[in-house]
Image: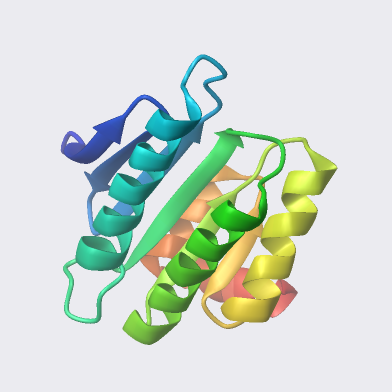
Length: 147
């Protein structure tokens, strides 16, 4: 398997190319200031909506891994996430969100998927299912049937 290609990195995120999919991993870093967090969010948003979730991009989809991220997000983050979900729809790309154990995180991302990308986004706990959905492989059709 080829190694990951770095697309972007900051104290709270890393975006890599993994085959024909991109993976954005978000971590909770309480020592990062609000200003630094906002700068990272802006950079992450720019890469995802400008390079990955665009119609003619190389990528089939995105795995958005928030398992180690914050247990919940606020209204400013929600607006940014809505734009990312909307970009997936416009680009006709699959978006798989990998959530952790937080019921709030699961609820918030499930609502986002339902409201902004019901045909393009899935909220999952299993890494293999997330990769399959983002890649658009045959296994993804089984995920679609369960949604």
